[in-house]
Length: 88
Image (cartoon, rainbow, N blue to C red; front, side, top):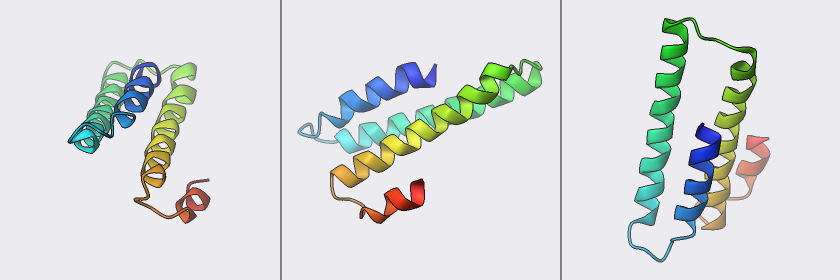
């Protein structure tokens, strides 16, 4: 669900750089996604609802979100290109 909702919203908001405070919206979105990840893991362990697909998709969603943040920060010259080497 994080992949389907957060990535398009993150992309849309990142293109709204002309709007004052767009970076704070992205930061808030990232924090919200982070907390949903924690809640998802907690509920899955509490109710013993761990699936093979979830074991694959959850780390993939986390990696995609981190890559999006690094691309965004690089695109707006907030970090140097060396972070791409550290990311991969």
